[in-house]
Length: 213
Image 1: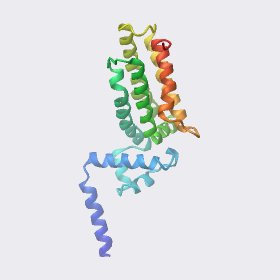
Image 2: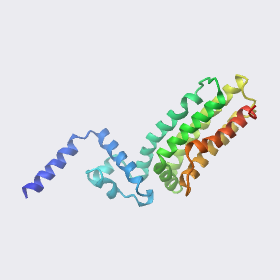
Image 3: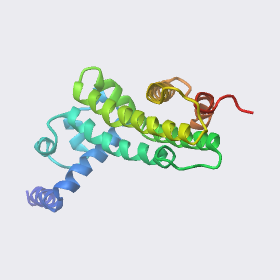
Image 4: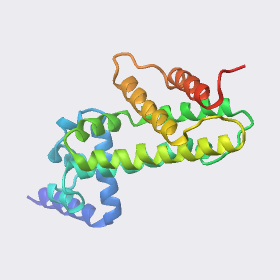
């Protein structure tokens, strides 16, 4: 009886020591680990919280459900994907713009591979959840379309590109990236980020700068 009480006291003490931010972050980390082993459709609150040592009610203190948790998981992906290409798209005037395209798309695809379980979970959830779908479209796809539109406009202004419609071109290029990255990750024999980036960069560079010399 005493050992049970000690374990319970220890567990309670462990919960008390967590700040709200730390508890929420721990749940998100546990979800990331779980999605590496389970599909999103197999994940349950009970399975998730067993990984944290926290109670089921603790989950609902921070998230209304698994779909809201998935939106929280997207925060880390958004930060990593932005960091992978932000310098390039934000106006870094590269000496070799074609090489910058290849390097940046390679970094982007490496982030997709690192977050492959999350990307797959988003696609599973998005079909039936407008909130997840809207967040993906707004915070990831939409944000990069806007960034790429500005990037193309600057390349045109510098005389490096002759694209007539930067906004529609950016829309096509970013949506192409998203579909190709996802399809490659979920394929039976995924290519390396480097191999996929070579193909995507060839398309980007042809569209933006014309045929290579």
